[in-house]
Image (cartoon, rainbow, N blue to C red):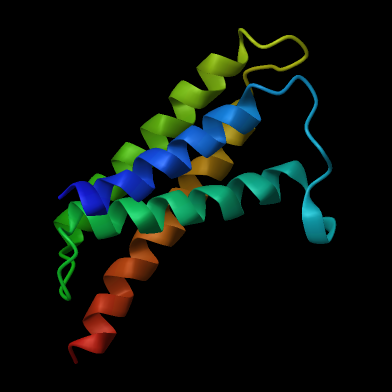
Length: 118
């Protein structure tokens, strides 16, 4: 079980570390900051779906929903954390981008498990 959740915790720690910076470097590949949020939380959603699905070949839609909720709530908590970082702000559009990425990543894992078992 730890082998499934440790990557999620490490990924969340990476996000927390980046959010602790007063100034972020520009996102790569010409992405906007919102695009970077979507990409980052797509990864978190996918890792969390793997963990909530217990690493099974067949990840249930309940596990996908749980992963979406966990990842999105982490995005909200991360925005709240930024209120205490000089130069950073709480942005509702960041939360929306986090939720979109969380849904994409978690859904991709769920869909892939269905395709593999078809």
